[in-house]
Length: 433
Image (cartoon, rainbow, N blue to C red; front, side):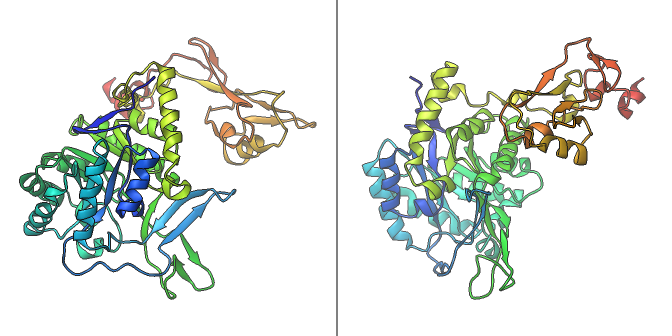
C-alpha cells in the first residue's frame, strides 16, 4: 500500500493533507477534532502582535457563489486574523503539539512591517514547540489596509526583507504565503527565496466582491447596509492556483523551492494535481468548512488507491511529475491534429453541440432533419467546445489524425510544421529564412 507519510522542508506528517490557516484552525478544540479526523497537519489561524486588539464584525462574514445544484463553488470572507488573545493561542498551540507529536503544526504570523515587531512575535512563539512558521503575506482585506497581508506580499522587496528577519530571529522553518493579487507570481516567490525562505505556500485568497444585494444596493455580505471587498477561495479558484504553482515550479529562478499548494482542494484528485505540478503537500480550507473535517478520509483513501494503481510507493514520486509537460504556447506540437467524433448510440439529440458550434465556434457540426448530428471534418478545428457542452460523458471524443493523413480543413498532410517557432506565418521564422 502506498505510503502517504510526508516530509515537507523537514517537517513530518502522516499524510500531505494540512488544514490552511483559517477559521477551522482558530483554537485547540477545532485543531484536535481535525487531528482526530485524520488531518496530517494544520497551519494555526494567523496570530498578530499584542498591540491594538483585532476586532471582527459581528454580522455576516461570508459571501458565496453556488452552482446550479447549489453546490458551493466559492466563498468570499471578510474575517480578519485571530481576535483571540495571543497568550491564549500560544498556550493552546503548546498543548496541542505536546499531545500530537506526529502531526505538523505551523504558526501563521502577521505583524507590522518593521524589524522589532517581527523579532518580538518570533521570540514569543519560540517555546511553543511548533514545527514552523508561515508568513501571511496574502490576506487582501482588512489587514492589508493597515500595511500588512497582501500590502506586503505585493512588494517583493518587503517580502525579502521580512523573510530575512524571520530567518535571523527564529530557529523554525519558514514558509512564505503568497498573494495571487499580483501580475507575476514568480517575482514574490523569487524574493522569498532570496530572503532565505524554506518554502512558499500559495495561493492565498483572491480580492473579490461575490455579489450585490439589489434591494439594499450594497455588496454581500452586508453589514448594516454597507459591504466591502474580501478574500475569495474554494473550488472556483483552483485553476488560478494550479497555474501559479506551476509557474513557480518550472521557473529557473525558483526551481527546487518547496511549495505548499493551496486553492480549491476538495478531493484527492485535486490534491494529486497540485502535487503533480510541484506541490510537496496541500492545504485545505473551504472543503473542510463545507463538508466537515472527515472529508480528509476520502482524500487519504483516494490518493492512496491512486498511487497504488500507478505503482508509486511514496508521495515524493508524484511531486513534480507534470512539471516537464508544462510549456509555453509556441512550443506546442502543431503536427498533433484531432477531429471530433460523435457516438450516435450515446447521443441524446439535445443539440447543445450543434448550437454551441454553429453560433459561437466554427460551424463544424451538421444537423439532419431527424436531429442526427455529425461532424464536418473540413470545418472542425478541434477546439473541444462540443465535448465541454455535451451532457453525456464520452458521447463526443477526439480522433487523432495519423502522421501523413490529410487534414481536410487545411488541405495539408499532418506533419508539416513542428510548432509555431518554425511555422511560416511566424514573423520570426520568416526573418530567419
